[in-house]
View 1 (cartoon, rainbow, N blue to C red):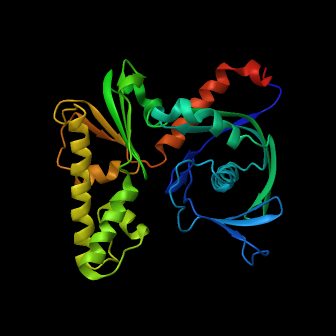
View 2 (cartoon, rainbow, N blue to C red):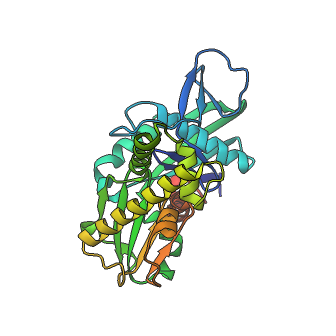
View 3 (cartoon, one colour):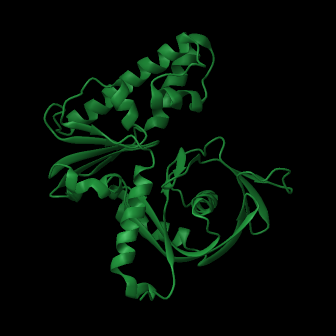
Length: 310
């Protein structure tokens, strides 16, 4: 092999950025002067950006400004740092919902590969990456790609993310594109409902971090019981809504083989009423990012000539 190409999977969520090993929120804030502390600071084209913290507001598209490009640089740096790398060619492996795949794929690739060579700093450490390729794969499918042969031949994957719910029927280990659905009823809307109820009853909001802890673990020792009760009750109502969406689209929760993935998988598992053997949960929020990396490695292995690899 003449050179090495590192595959890095990145999941661009509205609430969180994920790689195979890293998770951080989608906050981006420019710092107009050189910062005193460089933790989670991207230095790019002479400017400084703090990443993490309060998440970005949801927009129609992620390519409208540079925010997700900067978040991608931070995600790649975090992952490469874990691997002990600073200077390398990469295959950037990312995803889109299958229902928007054709419409957004080209623009997303152009956005992420607008610079073939990128020199930047993260946490004051220099990085020099060369984009060998940006590969885009269907989210939801990616979350189960590495275990697809262990699932039933007919299964419905339900990916509950921060902004959308993706419903993907898989038949004979391939997505049935004609039946795929994306619905804007993700966890951000659920958190808004929780805070609307908190304001109605007590005049105060909860942080998204406190709500997410209940979503992920079923508890939060910092919250007074009256707020914890609101969060749990609203999460039960939200899961019932998810169930009703599936029922409306013809899926029998007692019969159909269903796999819940994404950030909402833990919510459905903890606050749902169905617990039959036909239902599985993949609660790892990094599952899609790991899947993108898995699929990217397969692409790289089967297209060596494209990259000049021996």
